[in-house]
Image 1 (cartoon, rainbow, N blue to C red):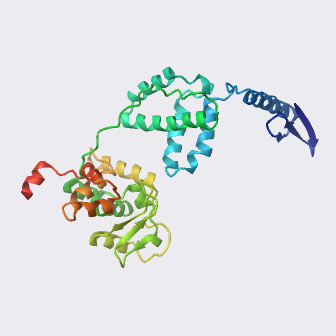
Image 2 (image 1 turned 60 degrees about the vertical axis):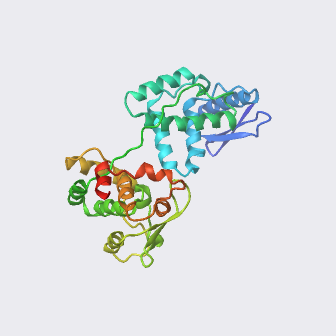
Image 3 (image 1 turned 90 degrees about the vertical axis):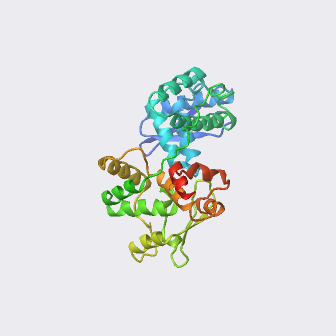
Length: 316
């Protein structure tokens, strides 16, 4: 039952539905207060009866984004995926109406526009969301993804940026982005690791940088080559703040635009990691390479070490 109290020209509505604690909210008009009270009464009564057909897919997904996703290590990327789904998927339906057929139709539509790996990542986010709806919120008895085949991951890339391409990019990129590009080739660090690097984690005297936030969640120390050290020295004598002063998304878009303008194709910024691994693997033992790149399984080295058959033949 709802009660209303006027105070200072505003109206406070209070709804009491056992066993829930009282809910209250203040509005400028009695009309808005009564509308909220009526909606809240229905919601609380349904929850008491374990009926959740009032929960909209959109509202549930937004709550998951704002309460669960934001606490994850990869929050930025997952928030972007959820926002895309909210914008392009028909989310204005009851959560209980989200069916296997509905999700299969979305999957097939997406596969006509993007690679299977992209769709796979979107469905991994949805799988976690539906599990939360089932296990934590108790809004649904089972996940609608049961029986839905999630697209397989794409084949591993084996693209190494050639010396000629590196030289072209070196002359094309502006100074700040050029430093990031060359530093990536020397260290094999991920784009987010480079843009997130701060001066308090740079140890030039000992020739390494310390990474706290890495993809696998474990910190690691990355040794610096002579060239990598020189790049950092060229940035000036600073002791705090961002080392390179660019955000990850800025680097992605700027690098892609400059590559296209240079008339080059077939590689992305992440391919600097493949290129670095292929180069550095010829200088240090594989276990040292794994330590440097943050791989707990040496098999990961085979994903990133991509020499051509001709290059191997030259060393025979």
